[in-house]
Image 1 (tube, rainbow, N blue to C red):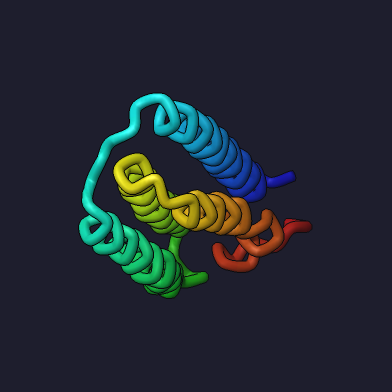
Image 2: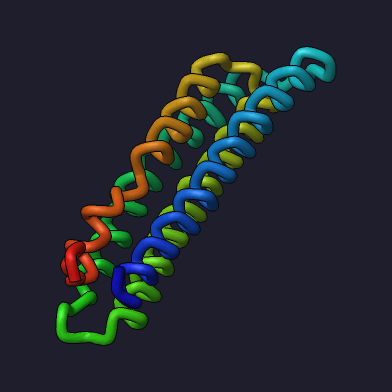
Length: 152
């Protein structure tokens, strides 16, 4: 295994650990929010509740495609002629940007769920979690994106 392959392997495994750590935190926060929402109910008007529900849906509809677009835009900046360290750095920044955007949308969704008690927002939170599970490209894709042959 060459040095470049080791760098790609380390980057892939580090991003996978970060991603699954974030997913675990999202699940725990979802469960805790659901539990505390049942204990401490906040009474808001139905009109405000419906407005907040639509805001949460709007945020989800905007953030998921926007994070994909930004990820793809940054990935397109990677050239096979660039040094692999720079390519891997661009990939890490692109993925972490995607992770932060999805996680922030998830947090907004949970805050609105806590205020409105609308269980549909738990489903939207689940969509964020599932999306984050499939967000990280595999190691083979990373080799292809960076331009390193696996057998080098």
